[in-house]
Length: 96
Image 1: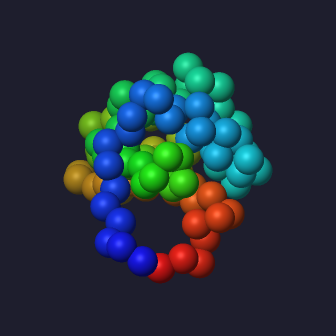
Image 2 (image 1 turned 90 degrees about the horizontal axis):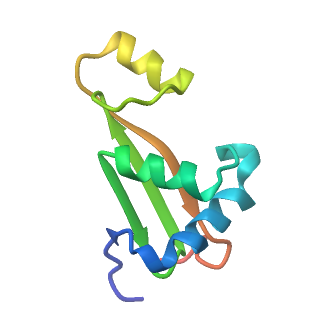
């Protein structure tokens, strides 16, 4: 298998990323397109693999994010990177 390099999120695959997120809404929380875009815009790091096969979004300490888990880190650390969601499509799980 070729080396996989995460890429910045392309606009044309946002719907695939949203579908992948919402397929795992129990673990990640359900989002609509506007909410996903807001998270992506505030992200310290947001990358995709393939055409929505995998996605990662992370925030640093400066994010205006109100998740209780994120706020726990903010209260305890001056600097940090918080990985909010990692999604991998079923077809890509276990590959590599």
